[in-house]
Length: 96
Length: 486
Image 1 (tube, each protein chain N blue to C red):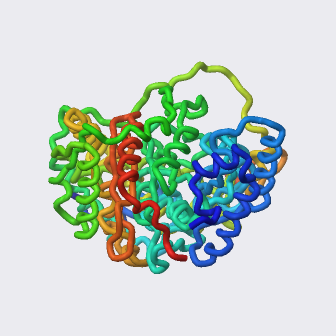
Image 2: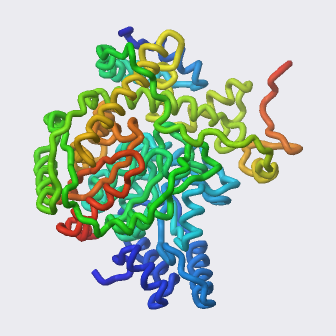
């Protein structure tokens, strides 16, 4: 098993869009290493002929593709931290 | 106890239907009880006094006009704050959802309210249901009603404490890896995790979508069965909800335990179970045996891998589900970020607590390039092996019995420094979620003044057998009739 380092945590935090403090980076590296070492037990199992299980039951997973009303736009925007003209407002993305 | 707050949901419904009690009286009594004990317990995040009284009066009015009494007429219920109610805050115990008021109501809640239940408040929980002690709430620490220096369990700790303390006869929780059953055990109440797909997840904020299930907590099997009969059922708004007929679960409660085969995986119970807890478990098996059940040994050889499997699968799903909290559409937003990337990163850093961050990091890691096959895919395969273990066991038995938690309620701070120790406390509860099967947690006595508990696990969609055996057990015991001195 690879050792989890602060660099691993930095890489994963970037993927997950999480800004972490210095303290958290060090703590999480140590704790993740511990947790993955514990989880190492599953590597010894023979899973060659075993199908992966993503859901317990899949019956009923499909429905007719019928258009229906969505939620009212003004109700949805009520919870937005910033909205304008019926849209979510965010910092400038292009040409900032 | 003859106070109104000590009545069962079944008794309340009977009396309200017979108009011997008004829903308003019942609601007021529970709100008074809540005011008396809540300052010591911190079980609720919000109390909905006016809304509850208005609903209760409306119900009384309808009954006075001769309308038939619905199945939960006048029964106060508490909701874990992970379930949406239109126009009311949903926090999930997290700062990141501050200010969020959902524009829709969870199907589970809508079903309760349509059945005449009166929502009196929303309960505290571990942030995003991640935890086993409710200490991960961003808002408050809920105390165990049996010992205020100890945790109520988690993540539905507020709901379990509310029921144990008599502020609501029924509460809703959610169970992703034991979050209904473990707090039920630690607070000495009954909790049902239904089969995956039994109860709609529409309006339930997602933690791990293939494992999450909504279910009731109450002080008796009878009340849990009453609530489950209302909660269960197919919902077109949840594509994973099962189109399977729902029986009246209360109809099977008098069926007894005769000739039921109760499987016990002794090999799995050898290590790490508190001695007192194990003694109470053996006594519980003895009670079932005396009631006519037959005990059989079963093997569940892959269960020692359940914790590792669970913490890979659940965190992977969580890391994906929690990507939506980015400060754009609802909840918290970081002030004055330099750019959009900064808005995401700073909002998530400020809004999420340490356990949620830890799980997002772990889940993102096991899904990341180079590690996916070794961790996530492999864990999904081990999940299949665990499910097969149960399928094999259910050839030889009708239910599997195990302790619910290896230990009774622990002290605040006892496990917070070492996340792995906290995870290991879920050893007996996560297998049911991985397999998708139902589980019923029951109180079975005390260890040093703290509740002990055991659980019955059943075949998919066979909640009836669990509830029938649970009722047979409670007919022979009175552990569930004891209440904490508050």
